[in-house]
Amino acid sequence: MESPGSCELKGNADFYGIGIRLGLYSQSLTTLLVTLFVQEEEGLNRVLNLLLQLAIFAGTLLLTNTGEIHAFEVMVVFWLLVGALSSLTGDGLSGVRSFSGTCRLLLYAALSAYGCWFWFIGLDTMQETPCTQIVFFGGSTLDGWFRTFGKVIAIAGLGATSGMLVWAATVYVKERGGASRRTRYHRPRTEITLMLLSIAMVILSITSTEYVLRENHIIAVDDIFNVGQVLAFLVGLFQLLNTLIPIFFKGRLWAPRCWLIFGRHLT
Image 1 (cartoon, rainbow, N blue to C red):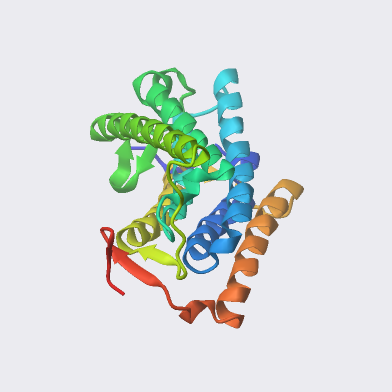
Image 2: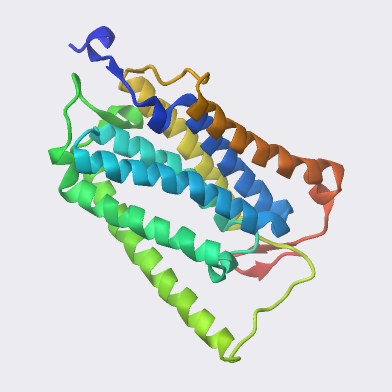
């Protein structure tokens, strides 16, 4: 039987330390709030999200290339970045028409492509750990049903993001040619199904990340008092506070909005 002491493994604090995790959790929550209540801040918020997400994904590629990453650490990256899907709420998928929205889709497409490589080939070539690697609730490992599930999600994600990129390019060309114009709404719109999905994804991101780190007995990743950790944490905290102020002190919380479910107006 594997004892916790024999399974302890020093984690990469520069990769998924507590400050970086809290920063990403704050960004996920901020993105959800921004798309619901402070839509005019979506562009800036999306850029800040992209910078931190891109840095983490670039680090993943670098460590993969040098062979210095464990398979469970790749899953930590996946779970950390899943929370950013909260940007699907608010005004639907209109954000893909912007440059930052398109860049976000490109990042997700790249992440999905990496996921395809990881689930089909990559995880078998990565460093071993002292004990069995846990990647999901219920003690799920990298073999069996979860690997099959990962393959399906990666392929579906790559197909979906590729399709959305083609759609965004088509819309851009049509609008440039004057074939169609973007509809402007006086009230912000909220698709209830996307909002609930986004909330669920944020919760899944946080709980799954912390579960994987705990079950794999990762140590030395909970010290926030170093430059890299503090910077990531402060960026996320500043974004969150900057969003909460107009929501609670400028009346955004009770502002009129259009509620939709499956595209049908409820109000």
